[in-house]
Length: 150
Image 1 (cartoon, helix red, strand yellow):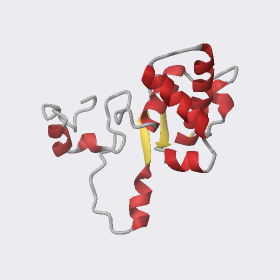
Image 2 (cartoon, one colour):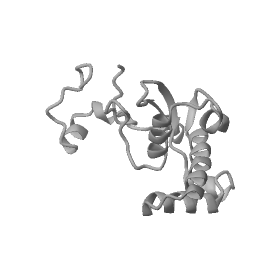
Image 3 (cartoon, rainbow, N blue to C red):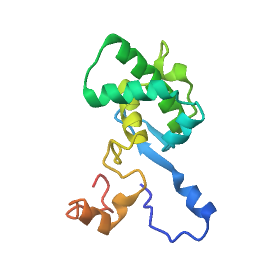
């Protein structure tokens, strides 16, 4: 696994180039994601406001109804397509007859909504798991970042 080191950003372009992250999903599949700007997606209509309100409200309240689950499926499909950059996906890949693994869909949604920042193997999506300072901050300083699987 490549070690990503912190760099001092020189330009906005340099900074913007750090938005793509390689992650390992629960199925073991590796993909590249970009955390979506949810306010922009809602503002531009890519994620309808009513859909976001219903999906997030259902998740937070823990009140699942058949209608809420159906709305959540649509929300997840739009969110996963907006988040995963490689490979390119369609909503049909998420909620169609032959979808990607649901455990992967759930993790992508959690990453996209900032409910988590570690992938399925414990790597920080921005590569901070290779930083001794970050590992100490997270209470993981007993792990060696250079050891495969640590």
